[in-house]
Amino acid sequence: MGIIKDRISKVLNLFDELSLDVIVIVNGANLEYFTGIDSGLMFVVNRSMDTTLIVPRLDLQRVQEIVGSDTRLIGYSTVEVPQRMPGESLFVSKSIGDYLLREVGLKPNNIVGIDNPDSSVAKELNSVGVKIMNINESILRLREIKDEYEIGMIEEATRITEEALDDVLKGGLEGKRERDVAAMLYQKMIGRGAEDVAFKPIVASGPNGAYPHHVFTDRVIRRGEFVTIDVGARYRLYCTDMTRTIAVGSVGGKIKDAALAVLEAFRKASNSVRPGVKARDVDSIARNVLAEYGFDSYYIHSTGHGVGIEVHERPSIGPSSDEELKPNEVITVEPGVYIKGIGGVRIEDTILVTESGSRAISRYPVDLL
Image (cartoon, rainbow, N blue to C red; front, side, top):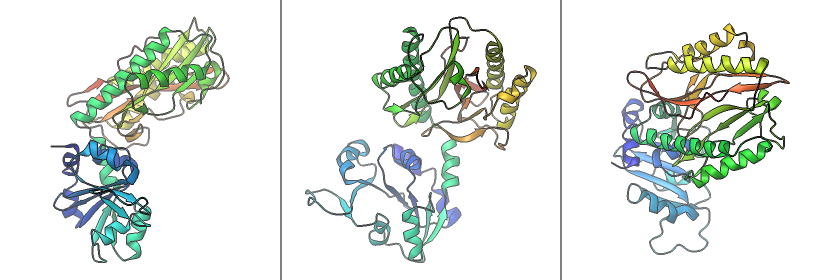
């Protein structure tokens, strides 16, 4: 079964549960999840599992080579210039939502499940009396549980990330600017097969480590300080997320104590990951360790998040999360300490929740302190 048929089979129950006539997907990440391509505009599913994927006309030929006969494929344009080639399937209109009215034939008595009720498509349907039902929560819950293919893609993204980081660290950090390190990470990941980065790499040296989402600068990395590197590749639409804090030479003082506390918090929180555990309890374990060392007031974010098509997905591993961990979720564990004027430390792995426990997808050493 192809990726499209496999994915839509998981939402067919929504037709009967919500009395839907059609399911319409317009959100970018959801489109990628259902179709396996990164340039979709709208994906339409009916009760018979017949599907239509609409893409920009300029992407039509490229996407055709990817999806083959798995779905009906249509190019969209607001004007037919130049005239279509023989066999070129186009929909031409000022509005893409018009396809649902003109070609699908939706009427005021129809009910449409859509993943973005605030989209222009939903508003257009509403304007003619078609009933809209928001199905985004159902889609996001579905995306939480990864199948074998998804896990494989995340594992490959992680392998690429780890090899890229290893290459960069072998060349040394001292004397390089933060942006030099970020540029090398980009180049190494793309060169090893990534299609993109999952997010802009964070390279935070010395006092810049006090900012969890620091943007790399011209600051030169010096001996005797920590460098926090948060990096992830994207491979065939799937992301990974990994952070390591590296000591450049010998580092001492309060920030070294913080590093040892973060390492213990990371290990204990990671070891607690298994099915049935509440996400907030994983967070509490990390916070409690940091509290024992007197660093809990410097821990200013949640302990983790889901990873998949997007680098931040459900579940949230934080103090307010009511979710229980489930098999085949992929999450991060990433405790950190951030001390203004001194620096910061964060360690992060991407972890698979298994049937009986968990398995770290990230395997790069953490004993770099």
